Length: 134
Ligand code: HEC
Image (cartoon, rainbow, N blue to C red; front, side, top):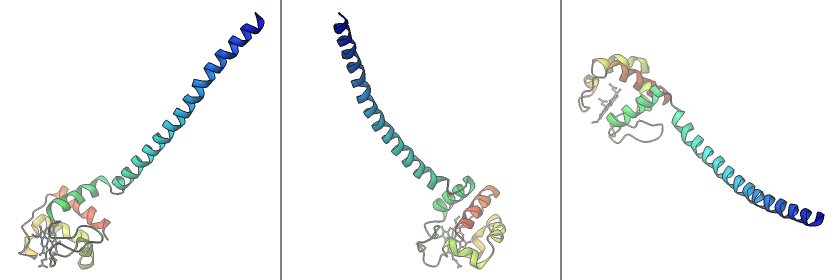
């Protein structure tokens, strides 16, 4: 009886331990894939949060409105050769001084460019983004 009970206990213990062991293997596999996912998410968000919200809006604005002629990043050439890459603008004049030109309508300087008149929010965002290219 004693022995039997002991054997039963042992069997139950073994039975209990086995699934818990295989559970812990599953668990660590799950943990690993969770860690991997967190890393991927982190990598994605770090590139997204590298720019402030305002700079990001400026980048989107530039991509949508200016990028078909101007280079709006740090490396590429302008699609339209005579349009200066945005990263070079600060060499011509302080970026802040563009605010006025943007507000009044940028068309005056270059007739081949469509007329843009930007509202203060867009100007702020765009200039913030231009500064990230300096
Ligand atoms: C259809 C093509 C085109 C688009 C779109 C365009 N540009 Fe231009 N941009 C030009 C060209 C061409 C020049 C150079 C003209 C010149 O040197 O006279 C230029 C020059 C500029 C300059 C320099 C001005 C100067 O007097 O030196 C600024 C600043 C500028 N663009 C801003 C912008 C912004 C901001 C946008 C988007 C809102 C934009 N451009 C969209 C063609 C374009």
